[in-house]
Length: 468
Image (cartoon, rainbow, N blue to C red):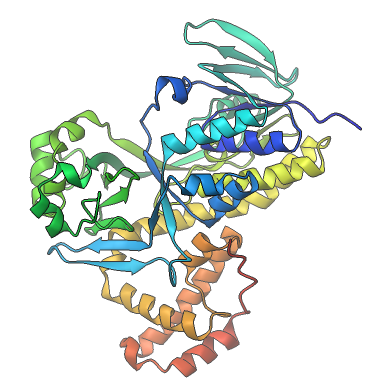
């Protein structure tokens, strides 16, 4: 039997650690080089969002690695969006039909450490504090530097880059042979704040905010304060706190980050636009001053690989904006596809890498488009009467003709159907909903029998939905 090739992974974050675990489970010898220190010893270094939304695609990948149950023990269920209107009222918009269709808030740091432990248990060798300085793709060698700047060369075998949106391996590949890189900035930034656990806040404030147990707000929801061109969101953490993220235009007239030159201006802005949220953030001044503005961009590449020598996965190949909660889930889905392909053809890396891009690139482009659309939906449409009417009509049709209608969000979040299919099916369904509501804007007055016939005669039946 021919020995499987050695694999060198650049990046020991979420996607890198999970991919390493899966490859090792299939008998590959895997080494991982990560520029950051080991978070299990040095503590998790922030700088990126500290909690993430785990959905069915990500759960499926964790199941293949035997880790889903362990991860869910550390996660908080979110049933839907709790929308907080300007006047202080709030209401829940469910993601799915019931509690079988929920997403989960997970800590990036805790999940990363769990995945590192699992990969090591499977035989993966990790090297922390090792930055990629360069690569000789003709000789399959890489140059690494430690924290002191000392360099060394390493025979790489197959090279896979899971080192994120700022990928050093992508830069090296692009220098060797241009990949057709395009980075499109959203023009909006973000800043993270924190609502602490309920026991640190006045009881009357927690009661007024609808808190429960350890949580100052309803724990089983992703909270949104939509304000048109901008918004705040809050995701629950297992210990009772919430991570709050403000999304604003980076530049331009008020409100924008450039129009909030100091903490006093930011506090006044929150007092005017998020008056129910501000009292729940007692460390507002400190957090706002200390946390830098993060940037938001979408990465597109024409090529994800150099023949059979090097391949990019996850954010290194297709970083997206965070507004569909699918960045991690998409990267985790990459790991399943790539592991299956490599396990089936371990000696044909060029064929595997080409097939991986053929399968995954249209889906990465589709979720990139849907993530951008979802920003508009979250910051604006969730409070728009026409959007709510389409949502209500869709819910009626999902119940009446489940074989022909499923909301796009559910297709993306709760099935394994390709993202590209969800995008096209969602557009076709939306066009029919618009047509029905143009004729009768009152949802209660829509003829549901006629509406059902329209969907059944116009659209193919949905494929098998393949829930988890």
